[in-house]
Amino acid sequence: MMVAMDCAAPADAEIDDFRLEARPPGLLKEAELAGRVQSRTNRQVRDLRIRCCGNHVTLTGFSRTYYAKQLATQAVLSAHPQVELANEIAVCSAQSKRATAVLR
Image 1 (cartoon, helix red, strand yellow):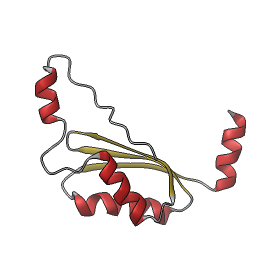
Image 2 (cartoon, one colour; image 1 turned 90 degrees about the vertical axis):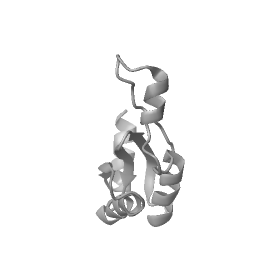
Image 3 (spheres, helix red, strand yellow; image 1 turned 180 degrees about the vertical axis):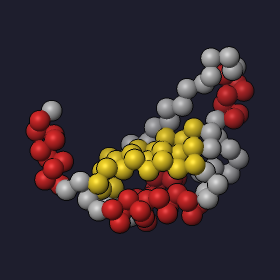
């Protein structure tokens, strides 16, 4: 499980101001959201990454089923229904993931 925050500050903003606005009050940290997603999906999402930028949360990783992808969405939205969520978890079979790794 990898957790990353890759939200760049606007060029004209001061770093201190940006840090104060980067996460709305009450928004769980990326690691806490990752734990919630992994718990809700029974660890069915591989290479899970969560990026939070302001009120926007992006999920990436791999799942074998659309159901696990849907559970990941529900795990985040149940904690924070007000966030804008982009679920970019790719649904693929284990065999197709291995084939992609071999081609690299």
